[in-house]
Length: 540
Image (cartoon, rainbow, N blue to C red; front, top):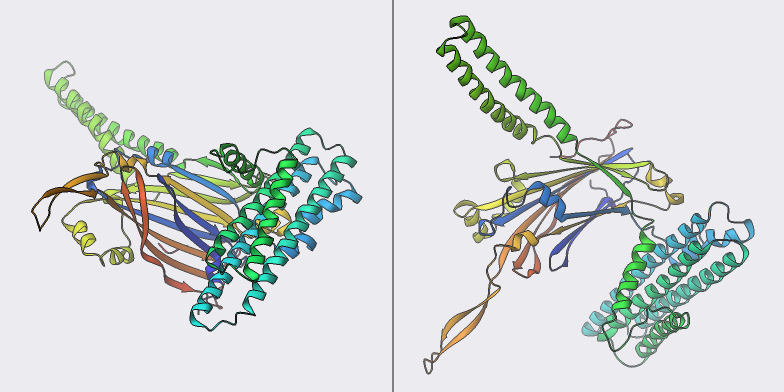
């Protein structure tokens, strides 16, 4: 029987980031039933041959240069009540420094402030999603007359007012504590500036999410409790905007202009506050070291051949003869070509097993290893498309023909992650539950050989036979298949997903789900026990 909570162990999300990039967001959340948790991510690209993509035009080095990877700790999940009263709350820990002293370096004060901004943002995001869900429920109920109009709006009002009061209380207490800490202790100019930036970011975060909720309520009635609720939400937005204007911070929206300063500032503040969650990565390439060993073996084999030819020639012919000279030259010629052939053959064979990049994930605070990530890239004939993915693609007649009569370029990017399940609970006072892995791939290389995105087609009117032009859009389809596997001690699960990116020369037009994420295998047998320090291999 599948573990009911298994889906939380490995969450995946694929979306378009901008016109030139798509994003794969992975959340690894080890259960702790095994010292190590393993995750395997297979990404297979099916690219039309007309785009002129292969191992030469989009080499490994170019692919990895276009691949941007961000690894960070999963934002701790704390409710508003937990932020206000919980013992592990960054706000509570900041307040405890007032009577007890700084209890450590000043950097810990800044750390707690940034962590507060992160958990508060998470709570506001969940509040926004909850309000959106409640509004959708009310609208569906109004359409079917199955929703009591007096009870559900009351529940919506209670949810909103509780979140309004909690968020304002968090801001009030943080600002009061920051001012008292700066007055009571010598924090230094840098720490005081950091606290001001956190304050500004939290104010912007509250404004953004509350404004978003008002936008989500656009379809709600414009009378009764809904008008009152909109007004209360917008009062929070106006209050925080006025607060920033009073502090003379430039992060205030203007009705006219491009709001460039606002956009830049909120982007900078988000990176500044969330950088405490980002993990340090140390990349290396063990494959290159093994390749050097293989190349040495190839050189030794070819040298043995050349030496054998030389010894044979010396035993048969005098060293000053023409025959000896010719055999020595031919032996050297074959030796040189044999060396290159052996190098290619050994490199291709070992490339099936060796990963190209190895990344050690390190906690920047404690310098402890959190996990290891290995990556590899295969092209063309070296790619073995899993049968389940081939079956999913065969459901489309165009794809079926393309796989047989029309050639495709197939590229497979594989990523294997092993996390130390026992290390995560020791980070940030145990409120960290997992790791978030964000992968962004720039597809600009796929656009180089595309035709113009628009062209005209002759059109004849059937009534008067007048000739005109019709506008036509030129686009290309790139299918991307994902295969996700997790091995977390007693739980193993494998899922697949197939998406299609519609591209033109300007970039990504849209992404469609051909096959939503589907569970292939899932098991959590109670009788399985994994020896300490080992994890069962992930299914290939």
